Image 1: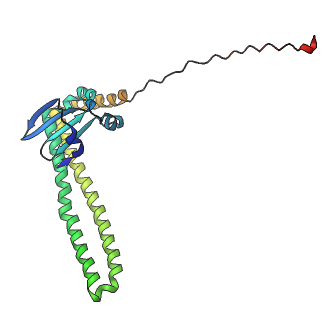
Image 2 (image 1 turned 120 degrees about the vertical axis):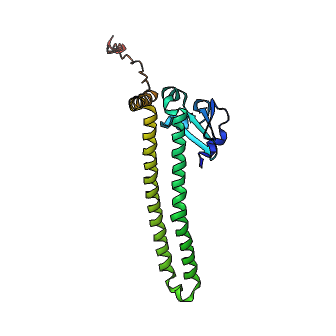
Length: 209
């Protein structure tokens, strides 16, 4: 499974490196890359990348220090397992639904365009095929989201068991506070301009003399 592969290729200076079930995992500082504003600026402080064999975690320094327990070796194994499950779900649906549907659609399109007896119905057939493609795509997307969300829920429960419920809840509070503090900007108060309320002295009229 390739995950954010373009970013993966650009990460070459890991802060930590270790093995998890035969896979190399590297921890990279987001602060040392050009991706800091791209991700942290939008509230995404941790980004997983992969070339399908190894994994690289790009994470903002301050966030990593606060949430380090959420990215321990055991927890990272859960994250990796989740991403691999999600990838299997996606490819499984592609092979079971999308590819067969495309193959059948192509066969029908060829039949209606080449057989004399079916040519008069070619336009209707193409409209029908398009409708089936759209419905199948929508159904595949719905099923994929549901299965991926189920895998995510299982991963969160596994992480909660590893960390412990109380510590897990404490981390969630720290996470919320980190988000709040990270995006807290001090308002610059401009000094007030004093406006004199004293009336200007009237100019002396030379004709009055």
